[in-house]
Length: 185
Image: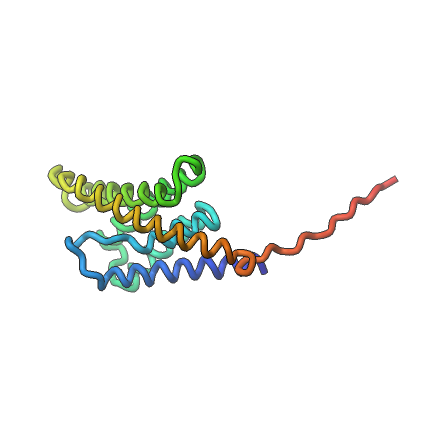
């Protein structure tokens, strides 16, 4: 029962990530290729609640399913999103696992946003543009990644507090088996 509830919660996080990705499609953007990355809120939340593997699962499923829904599967957009999403999740995972005292969820989210934009730029250079001038966008994309990471991290902190205060109801611990010691004489 405990594993089933955990699976249901992870499924909800994936579904919410896809919904947030869809909402971003209709939010006007100052630049055509810039988004806040609201779906990453669910990735970091999954990582904090269930671990790095859960965060990678949410990212992978979100990118895959959203690409099918929005018609970008196996396109350059998919490759940019998938590669940057996985790499930023790995960086966030390293920070939460190995440096939990150095990086708050907000700091972890800032690292993820910055990494996401850096990797997207590198992949765009390797697959699409192949002109060094694309890296002139890095300062702007870096600042956008930091700002969106800060916003997303703040939302994660709020949600994490709310969810963990209700965790005993969401994921009650399975009853522990009563182990009796037996003595063989």
